[in-house]
Image (cartoon, rainbow, N blue to C red; front, side):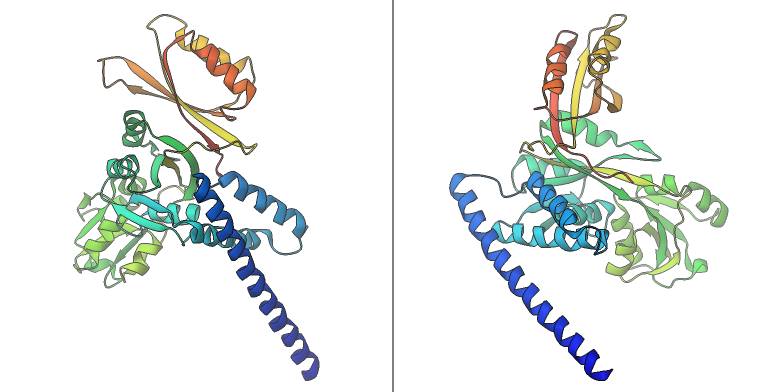
Length: 358
């Protein structure tokens, strides 16, 4: 029995050695690809290609190795190889350990260089000025709805939506001591506070609650003042050495936030895409109906439509729309062309791979 165990462990060691050598060989080839792309002025980030690799790996696996674990392993491997070609710079609403930071890490992997900024508009500024390659911004929450600042900024800055990711949101109350009775003030982002209203009203009705720019900033305050508690992520608790007073204090379970990846590049079709648009219509009966009919007649599914006041004309509105498909899909192209007949303007914000919402 002991000899058999030793033999099996030896085989595992040999397999690990082979895996590491193959990883190193894969990295070298990725670096060569990076050199070729650089010589041709081609961007290193190709999400379509990365999704093709993952699909192929899962097909080869045939369900033997746990699929979710395999996805994580290969996603990190792909992202590490990409980082060896060119280290991506990604701006997010900081400081570190915000949900934007968590979403950025999940999307780009831990090998990217992440740049925290103070506001959502600062993310747009960093991308627009090309100090970073991409930015990660919240666009809507499943409970609180759309993030108006992001919608307005994507229109004003003229950047492209290059991707999306859905991040599950769980809020935790934390402070230095871990004791509820030490809390004299609670800090968090306005949306986090809104998502925990009932819990706070029931458990800490007399404790004042104040808004700050981010959940992570609240955690930083709590890290230097025993009387202050923060509503933030588990990552924030770990990073700022805080104790959890209460876990999962959000009023509704299953809360998630959709984040946009913004940049200046156009994403190629992957076969499972989404397109985002802005449009405005004339002030006449049936104007919006005529636009929506363009999609209905082609059986293009709309996943979102939102109106926002125009910044240029009082009491005029612009519409943000998400639909399934890519701009290069013939039906989508045809639909947008017909829309022009009924719209004052149509602005394509981007076509990008659909994120997984469940």
